[in-house]
Amino acid sequence: MTDRRLRTVVADTSALISLAVPRADTAYDTDAAPGPLQYLLTSCDVFIPPEVTMELQALTQYQDIHGTAATNVLAARDYYTVEEPYERVKTSDSRLTFGLDDGKTDGIVLVNVLDIDGFLTDEFGGPNFPLIHAVLQGPQIVPVPQLICDYARNSHMTDHEARTLLAPISPHRIWDTSPYVAQLRARLEENSLELVTT
Image (tube, rainbow, N blue to C red; front, top):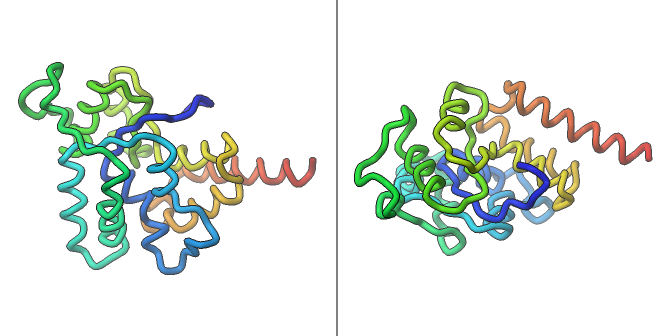
């Protein structure tokens, strides 16, 4: 994400789950700390393809934090738009094959047919990231950890609040071992120290 405001986004299932994890975590103080899913849904227009809705519904059967997170995303249905990408004139009648799961594939198709600022995903460390980059036709990839850090950089929240958001998500989304997330955390920490010393 750049300094320009993210006004429209297509989100995949993994991104929505990651953003919904804090509110699903009973140890997270939702009164004192910001809820990243709520922040996303109220700060920009969010679109998802029907396949993402089906993936979320499938996740609700699990009695874990991911199932609760999926339930919370579905409960926020009034705050995002479900749009079928294959009903658009510019798209194929059948699902394209990018080598990604159906939700990501349909999300990318939707991004490519709408005038969208970015594709929000939890893919940032594996082989899917360059593949997503290759098939997007213009909009930028916005990894969830970067989105949270950008909220701090653009003064929508403090660096401390951004670090607080990363903390409950990381263990549930296997971010603790990610060098990418470690770099973002370090940057937030440096920014906080600079503010203290100035």
